[in-house]
Length: 365
Image (tube, rainbow, N blue to C red; front, side, top):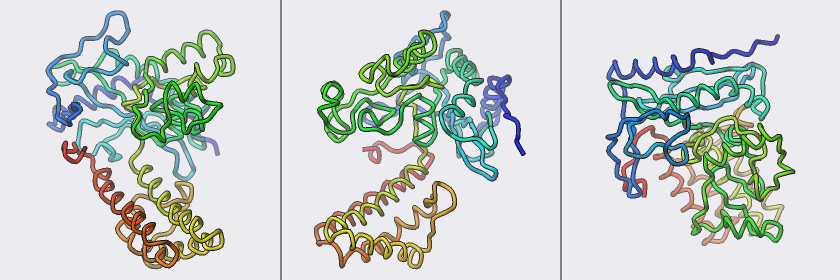
């Protein structure tokens, strides 16, 4: 049975303004200030003035830190039974902004995929209203505020939303312009933007203005990625569905936790393979599977690509000593110490990522 595509596009602006008005009148609206480089909150004293010519007056389509604003997230999620792709609006100026009852379902397409054609079709009816919302702002209380639209999704959905090609050796990140690694083939890009492996380099960020230029190039002039060339389109190979500053593209923290947890487990297998050979690597993979199931009590779930989920990640990190013990017969002491320290650092990071709260400056550093 096929279900119809459903959307609330005609009422999006009213729904957003109404929800913000409810939060304000109920005393549940929470200010979310910007912070300076030292982590100190910047007082918001300026009211927003909508531009008369329809063009944002602030740099990179991002309001200045001292301007009153509201924070709205647009997120994509795929799952359920039967599977569907959903677009959800979150209101970040409140406690528990990701709780289901505190969000707004913007669109859903049952029995769909989260590939670019489906994502673009889902977002197309809303793009004009999101742009109008960002340009006009919204009145909350007695002040007109700027609207910051955050893209809050997993990595594939972020790439599909911004028109980014996806992970590659050339320009793998939808947020910055660093290449994955140095190569003769990418020497021009490396000279201009550096590589993400050079952690000391300041990589130039992508900009919302550039995404808008690429949308114009693909929609108006009929340009193709092949005609523009990589050094011009910079891995934006499809028409961006939403224009948002890269500083306001926020990966889902749950997916970060899942990804780092899996990387830590794979790193253990890679280390044993490097130290003792392929046969030992296969052996430790079976040993780790038993440790996870018997000692830690977690099993892969039939969703998230057969990975673990949030509670599993916390359980594995809190019992990482069991993983370290399993590695002891296979690794040199120096390698084992470094691996154990990596788990310790990750445990400290999890306590920060699992909160919807303003992080103090010391913890930010």
